[in-house]
Image 1 (cartoon, rainbow, N blue to C red):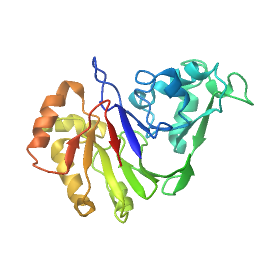
Image 2 (image 1 turned 60 degrees about the vertical axis):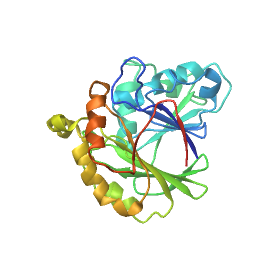
Image 3 (image 1 turned 180 degrees about the vertical axis):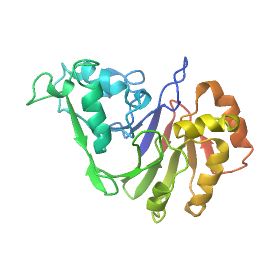
Length: 254
């Protein structure tokens, strides 16, 4: 699998984009930076988007991507997530108040966008990938994902504070090539992290102790730009050789 980092930040600063990843050019993980990072031709190749939760920084471009694609002849863009996230999108986003309901445009029989509910804790097939949504600990309903293709698995935490179910579910997977794990705040802002359901480097250390037997690289995402330097300094103090900081615009091979 080739994973391109479209954005990997927990807020928007010039040159620092919101969270979004693209796997093999067709499967997006979250939608914070799709249209600002890809050409129209690249956008047209996307077949599906997996959303971790309903917060705006992770869903932003599911508003603009259908708008860009509506005049193009192609199958509907499929957006997948758990029931509570899909419900939030239908009620609060594509409601013809905040934004047009692209699930009915140009018509209900052939919409540009389809919202699809997936189960938790069950492996399913989406566009040639084996996907499992696993609950994590955030301020709203949120899941992480394990994504498998050709006997390689990557794990994406989404937004989370200290969590257990995700690690328990992936503990027996033998072919994990990398874990993308959020760390949003520096240690001195532990209270803010706890309030929002996020990790600090101190909390990150405890999470990694839960999965130390996996022996795979851990890629840090969702750093708040205003705290980025301090977060990295705190992470460096951990002296953990498995930790890497994700680089926006870079493609990783798994």
